[in-house]
Length: 271
Image (cartoon, rainbow, N blue to C red):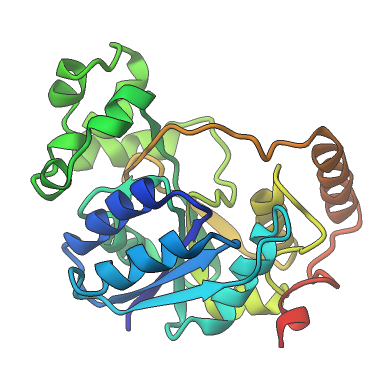
């Protein structure tokens, strides 16, 4: 396997199905899919079992019981279960363009992790996208999106740039090349070296904190936000918790001030 694609999800079957259709039409075929399921109900398992008959890539379903927002814990379990030495992370609400996996693999490099972004869609378009829209790739066509209600914006350049132009935009963007959970990749050995995600953290910067420890270990990052394209399907965010955000902010501050590399509450807890 050239890569393990780790997809986080929680009780969002309609969106996960569209994401899996996106990974079924990748130009690069040599990868496995690991679904990091943070406690979804039986409908998610039923969908995954159905999709195994429609998708050529092997699918591994990593699940634990629902005990609140424990995304960091299930991602660590997914890392342990990965069979490849290169891991690509995304979310179950982000449909990948058909060159998504290829772009990550083409840009991988020892001593680096890769940082991508996403293109946000409104709820109306998120619901409207069909399997055929994904297979034909028209859901990545700005003209098609505008016809279906997308507002005109300079941000649309994110998915309309040519290969040459995207390289220039990657080089000049002021956005930091941080670890973004919806679109990032790195070597499994590097993630194990920092003990994976900090399981004390809930929603809010938990992915960035992992990247900050990778930086502390001496890794660099590479910007691919205009090359590795995925479209983000809209949803509510009932899991946002102010107390957790404050705690996460304090953990990140401690990590950076003390140049922490290895979290004490990470992958080891799952072994």
